[in-house]
Image 1: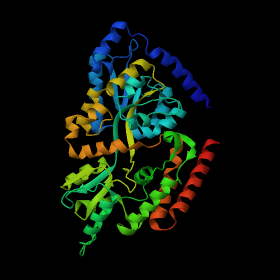
Image 2: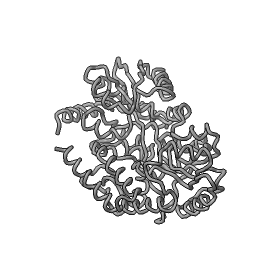
Image 3: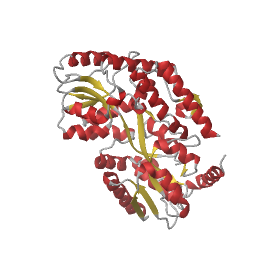
Image 4: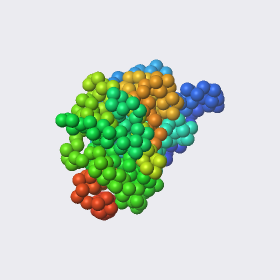
Amino acid sequence: MKLKKIFAIASTAVISAALFTGCSPKEEAATKENSKAKQTAELKPEEGATLKIWDNGGAEGKWAKLVASEFTKKYDIPVKVEESKHDKAQELVEAAGPTGKGPDVFLAPHDHVGNMENSGTIFPNNLGKEYTDRFVDAAVQGTTGKEAQYGFPLAIETYALFYNKDLVQKPAETMEELFQQSKEFQQTTGKDKKFGVMLEPGNFYITYAFVGGYGGYVFGDNGQNTADLGINSEGAVKAGEFMNKVHDELLPLKNEDIKGDLIGSMFNTKKLIYRISGPWDIKNHQDAKVNFGVTTLPKLDNGQVPTSFSGIKAYYVSAHTKFPKAATLYAQFASSDEMLMKRYETTGQLPPSKVVLEDEKIKNNEILAGFSEQLKYAVPMPNIAEMQQVWGPAGNAFTAIWNGVATPQKALDNAQKQIEDSIKNQQK
């Protein structure tokens, strides 16, 4: 075990023991009477605590400043919010933390958890089952590492099925229906090429939905067991065969010719009924005045809804903070249902809270409700460090399958070996 990680675990044990001290019986009784108080009144912060928060800019930054203001009003703890890119959080915190210039709490994507855990960058949140039970399973699983649960979930996203309401009266509930509707639509092409459905076949983030839907997986034990690699599992091979069927019957283009810009343009100009994508494409189609909806991915021939990958944005407490109680209290406050609703209202991003997802403001938003429904079938991207060795070979395998360069079994066998070799080299 690396010295840095030994220090982090030892330090975490000391702080974990101290985090929940200082709560009087009167305070504990009050939290039981008020469900909102339960979410934010569990810790007594250190005397003289001040906090620095790193978050994105834009709408997310606006929300972060609102949270900071509300937190200071409630707990009289000064909070400074600084803009920092969340997808660079790990390397930035590791560089600034030891110098005392880093944040106490910072935003990061869940798939960085493994690396941050290994490097001793983050503390477990230590709030227990009462806290984590508030969130959808994918958010909890995604922010949990090998040693502990670390994250304070703030937003969750996945991809689903976009459909043009002017081209189809009722969206397909099964792949059989999708194939039938697509073929009927493509027969009306005339001079213009039209397609029933488009997706990026070499993008393993997307194609994993079919792998999971057929019972395949990347790593065993909910994405944590690197000794159990499932890239060439039976489910993955079936997914490859399914992709061959989509190519041969609906989308006979090379992988290299199917780019996101092309798919977006086809959908905007009514030359495409369906596309598989995420919330990041909502604005593009709204700006183009497309009459569209979003629904769950159609059931496969085994009756299962494809298990899309989900991504989770969460706050993490830095291992370098001088005020772990105050920092944990802040992250807990920011991820309360009240603050998560304000985040949704500010950013439009789906909250990971079970209660907030059931709010009428979200349920009445047809587009977001479609993504919310798909989240019931989503699984978080594995967050262990070894996942970085998977993306390239897996994507190349599905590209080879789609382009007819290799059979599903051969392509996935090759990817399996490449990934196994890379992981072995990484672990040396």
